[in-house]
Amino acid sequence: MKRDRIYSLPHDRVGSFAFDEQVVEVFPDMIARSVPGYASILAMIQQLAARFAQAKTNVYDLGCSLGAATLLIQRQVPQDCVIHAVDNAPAMVERLQMKLQHSERQTGVAEVRVHQADVCQFPMTNASFVVLNLTLQFIPKDQRAALLTAIADAIVPGGALLLSEKICFDDLGQQSLLNDLHHDFKRANGYSDLEIAQKRTALEDRLLPETMQTHIDRLETAGFDCVAPWFQCFNFASILAVKAESAA
Ligand SMILES: C[S@@+](CC[C@H](N)C(=O)[O-])C[C@H]1O[C@@H](n2cnc3c(N)ncnc32)[C@H](O)[C@@H]1O
Ligand SMILES: O=C(O)C(=O)C[C@]1(C(=O)O)C=C[C@@H](O)C=C1
Image (tube, rainbow, N blue to C red):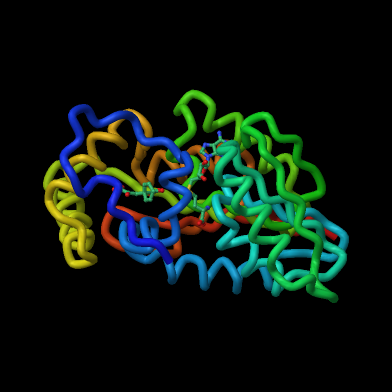
């Protein structure tokens, strides 16, 4: 796995963060060293897929990057599910397609279809399990409610959405403490102060966090019946939103 050194030297001008070839090259290392709890969230996505994916339905991994969640989900869902892995970054999609071609052709597992598309425009239907793992934070705020409503509308009774995000806090003390703890986490994982500062500048207008309450309210309005935050590590959190089984 190639080590992320993208921001290790001073940049004359730090441009806006993009999921381009340079990022794709180091992405597994970057995300593991940057997101507290990433490995735990992935492990639980695998467990949740086993619980929520239903036979003859679609499973969506929206903003799939290199398919970390997709490949874990594939091991858990019924063989007659179709897993749609969606990302709008050409470099990510190309690398994921290569990865899938080179991985052994597995028998007895659900088919994965990779799509290069904007998740806000992507048609979804008959879905039992949908994953938005650290993706909504990159979508313009005014498009988030429509996306979550489209997801809720596409989910069958008893299905669920897993939403993980970087979050912010109304309380200034909490915001400052959890932000500092996140930076300590990055430092402990080998990032220098320069790397942390330059990445922060690059993400400033790209990754737009919201509070836990904003996420909960929006998921309820979108049509989910049970909205349960289940994980938080510093300023990263994950929420499970479930559609009720239909009344008998
Ligand atoms: C932090 S990464 C997601 C990590 C991934 N879900 C995982 O579990 O490893 C965010 C991804 O969302 C994708 N993305 C951002 N906005 C998008 C959009 N509007 N449509 C599709 N993909 C998008 C980016 O290209 C990037 O690959
Ligand atoms: O918040 C930060 O400092 C991050 O680096 C977070 C984050 C993310 O949550 O997606 C940003 C970009 C990369 O995808 C990896 C991690």
